[in-house]
Image 1: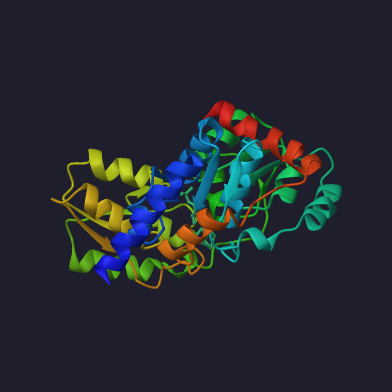
Image 2: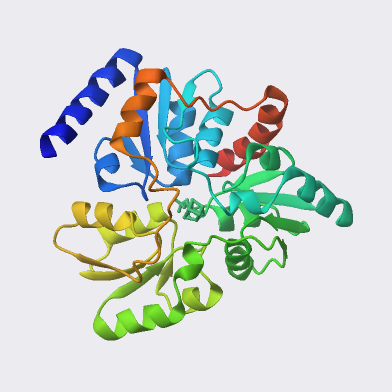
Length: 304
Ligand code: 13P
Ligand code: SF4
């Protein structure tokens, strides 16, 4: 088994060189996929990397909207998603048509679109954000009337931080809503010294009992810089591997093992190898949609 894994990794590295490819990996991916990353990060960091890479091919180990964003910012590259079914249920909670209908009810509204959305939805939006910069993006809009899509809980948190009342789309992440305030308090009883970090996609009551609300990239930095030796982590459990690997002297406790995103787990080493061999699945966004989505993503990158 270990030998087969070594063989696959060797083949991936060889093909990666031949194709001049870069492997971008999200913090929630399986440990063995994280280990082959050229760059491992959160949604914002990965889109910044995708925009700047001089590789010819981007292999995106994450979910569909992330690979689409890579294509939106760098359409000359071949963008590959190893598993075409790696979607995001939250992104599917809004369509371009339903957004257009809502905008008609709110004439003149500015749409802030979480990157966990399809390219077609981004194309109908004014500016994108990620969990790392949602507060900054909302602040940059002054006192404009805002419709925040599709994550109501990230929107609620950005509204609270900025004091800016917003219209919220009723979307949510099925993985993060499984992290309850009760679970957090139970872990706190077991590890009273631990600091609690949660993702802004969590429920308001879970965020209320946390010490810090951070994107996955923010959690990585916090863990590195903090003097705390124990941290209770309220986000998708894939991040625990990276936290533990980079901070061997510290202890990271997931709030609940139920916080697993099946879509993030679809990517395997075998699929990455297949993807590089076949140069599939290619992610392409029609140019008219891409251009409109790009202006919303570009505005976000400019202020990040
Ligand atoms: P980050 O932007 O914090 O990496 O989060 C992405 C995501 O999908 C959270 O569920
Ligand atoms: Fe989507 Fe939630 Fe999975 Fe992130 S963790 S990709 S928001 S379903």
